[in-house]
Image 1: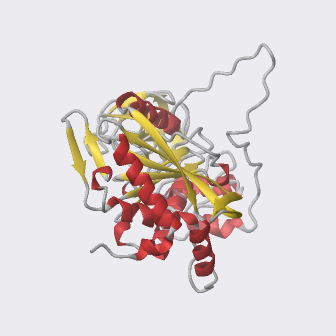
Image 2 (image 1 turned 135 degrees about the vertical axis):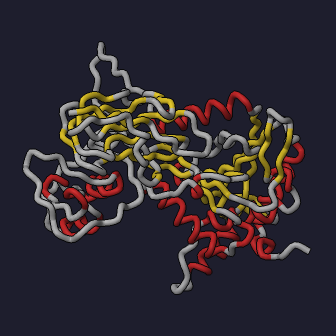
Image 3 (image 1 turned 180 degrees about the horizontal axis):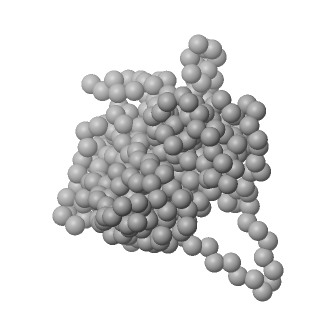
Length: 417
């Protein structure tokens, strides 16, 4: 017998270390080739590390939440033969949303299915499945131990899961993270901040430490744009529009006159990098935390194309199927809490951007118009700016431009001269 050592792989893009966010095996487990061993996270992506060999797990090289250097020892496996120190196992495709535990793992892109002959699995054997299959099984309430696998070494594929979903054994769903257990007066619960939550915390800290924020709030009468939205939604053959595509369009049009806000600020080099294309980040709440999927080249999209792309990237972020491209490259961000938007907020800029537009709750209330009190749909925009490169007057003029475009929605569709 020999020992096979698997190391943290070089995932590329100059990454020097990763965070270990989930183990799928324990010391003493018998594993097969291509079985998922662990999930590691870099930036906002999760990568599953599979085993290149069959054997028994001897030792794990790190604990959940630990930062590990590329090339460091991940796991030791006892194998037949002499064994060796492995060049890091080839990682599985990148995915989003890290694993909080062994039983709730991160999704990744589906693995190709093997032959269709189903491999039997003993009751005591752990089911072999990719993170995306495990996540779908968790969402469907399907017990993977009851699903026969048709892939290599009995690996469960998406097709196997689809076939079993209708009549498979159901398992109790774990409580959502928000459903915290009750604590007694003298109890203290220590909750490690790891995975995506750690990345979010680092990102927020970086933004607040480096960027001197200031927030400008303006009231907007959205009665006319809401009337237009209702009229367009009456056409049943088109995708239903929310207010966000109109706001996306307003940002694109307003940036024609304020291109310095569609930018990144490199404070190390002291350079403001303006972008010709508008890549709109859309802050999106997911089970893994707050992610910012990106609608690329928003300046080229009409309302319905914007709505379609917005729905695609937001759903990708929520389901864990977003690609690295979907989660990177934004040049300015929109954030909205919808009905929970409150009256005023102070959104944090998505570093290294220089502006973020926040949408507050829409309410029907009395407003003076033409000497009379009338009911109007009103909404506040709370927008934050990097005061190092954006003066207060410029910020105010930009928000006033957004206000004018939303209050007179016909101007959203006037091409630049």
